[in-house]
Length: 378
Image (tube, rainbow, N blue to C red; front, side, top):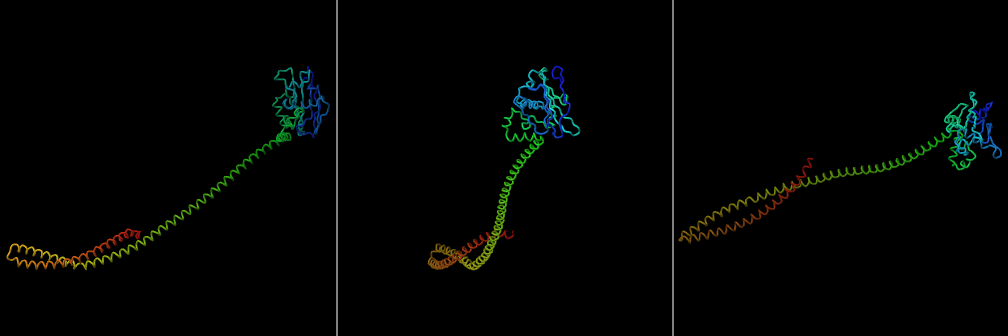
């Protein structure tokens, strides 16, 4: 690269680094027309490196060179508003190169990252990037640096002087996050996975709590249903007992009804016998009454004939009168006998009515018993 007007940059003659360096360590920083330096080269050691010197001797310039050359944004340096402001005053171009150790395995060469700034070029082409002297895009440089674990935007890995206050304002979580990334990017990924696992664990715990709560609710529901089932079984048992008691009651009622039926049937037979006996006793009285009625009819006929004879035969009046008196006496005697017979008939009739009433009552009881009698066949 031309330093200015055809002058060539003097390349380092030897490769820096030793087995003590870790992969991705800075082993050389070269600056040309960069801020306060016209040309300077710094070779850090594999361990702790300290830049010491009075103010204005270029300590911050080295930090800015590292930040810019390793792809850091201007805000990570907090020096200057544009990339052009880093070219040394009075110069139209400048560059900075950082050599990174890639390890000694397989004879791998170090990675040299160079950023060139040309103020005479178009605005879009004023910065050019190189990897081992090969032109590259900024994205290619970022990928190469990422493979080496370079994290310029991590304030725990790279902290410019003017950004110390920002570090002090970081929360413990942010410091832990940035520290993990600085130690090992995979460690931060593992931490992120751990947080995801913790989140999943909390979710699982929450779901387990919900499941347990749901399980408790289901157990309570089962207990409630078990009580309902027991009550239902008790109700069914009571209903069965009630059914059996109803059947037993029906059998008892049937037994009582059958006993009443048998008793009524027996009473009916007794009443029928009494009626037959009364009818046998009453039959002569009826025959006698019929006979007396016939005699009365005959007497009435004779009396009528006598009255007719009395009227037609005046001379026989006396005789007829005597005869009529005799007949009247006979009639009176017969009336007396008829009245005696009628009184006897009234008594017999009353006895018959009472017997019929008892028969009707017995028949009614017999009918009630017969209505219950079908249960016996069932």
